Amino acid sequence: MSDLVIREVAPDVWTFSRPFTLLGVFPVGGRSTAIKLSTGEVWVMASTPLTDETKAKLAELGEVKYLVAGNAFHYLFLKQYKDAYPDAKTIGSEDIHVKVKDWKLDSVFSAKSPDTKYGFEEEIEHCYFSGWGNKDTAYYHKASKTVIGADLLMNNPPAEQYSKTSMSPKSRILAAMHPYGWQLRWFIWLKQKDKAAMTWEAKTVAEWDFVRFIPCHGAGSDVIEKNAKEAWKSAWRDYLH
Image 1 (tube, one colour):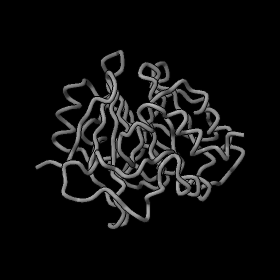
Image 2: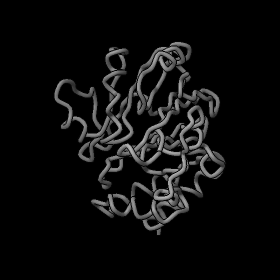
Image 3: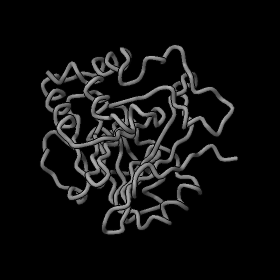
Image 4: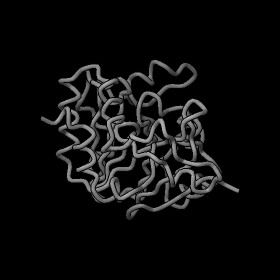
């Protein structure tokens, strides 16, 4: 039986959620997101394996045009997608470009070229977090008022991602790793490399007109699906003065 949960969370916005255990101990879940653009092409933030189920749904949605990484760590499955969709444009942080040896990204997010256009800007805005250690990129799908990110927000416990397994999604150690918990604020601070840059980046996201945030880690509770801007302002409040 498959452990993958595929769900349309908003018109033309699909999530692919499955179990993922950090360090083999902590249940945090994993999630990819696909968006069908008005052109009929498909944009994918690839953070989970490219399974047959995932391929089938993407084929149903349309031609995969863009493959993006969530951050400098959420790229481990990106080559699977690149191999399957060779005509798609792969994009990720400059750190990934340095890490990978046997293949390269087609384009990179870099603080040195913040005005670079990648082709999807009319429908999906982005904000590259150059001041944060994980080098995340937040993506804002304007039509559905949805922001997609990797580690910028987490929302434990990851109930949806473990819903097809017998494993418990709960972790006492990570119980406060959610937008209103102290652990997420501490994690954000821990990854701080440039506070001035992070402040500008956090404010950029806060100014977007969104109601939903799709994280890679954590379930789709009301906090993320209905009050996402409040969740963002809570988690990132140290940078939103």
